[in-house]
Image (cartoon, rainbow, N blue to C red; front, side):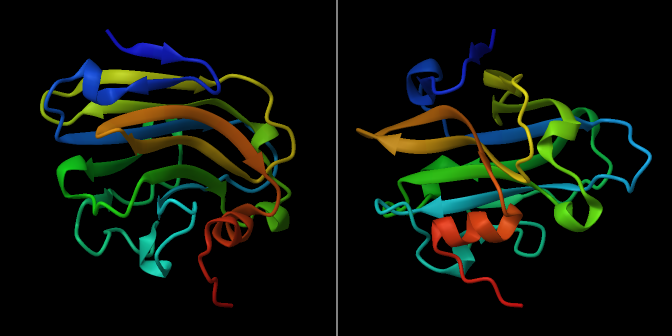
Length: 192
């Protein structure tokens, strides 16, 4: 049975599943029904060094860069609709993530949020779950239950390496400024 986490809590994935090799990071959400434009939420992963920055722009995994340079992190593609269940998946081969990468931030942003006047306060039933790829067993889940207000970007969680163990932390931190703000925070240069 999966362990349900609260905001700020963490779990050792390595201790829960011995010899864990690959995981799915599954993300889901349900946009509230509005009279405006449809919602398009996008999951991304930032591969981070000890300084909480990417090595370069190739460490930003998203709908226009689906695979990390060594193939250890693979985004399964953009789901435009959202809805019940898993909306987007990111596969992580924990055995082949480079040693200088100590943390992978899993984020979700709203595409053209300001133009469409949308924010995470209009999104409900958001979650992130960690699944053992070998047997599809859910290891941990974090439901982002609190009202998220006017933020247009969210860090849902982090998969990180600590003392030779892989862990997961439930973050649930909002950002104003959408994807550009997240990219700046993690050291990714955004081209206009």
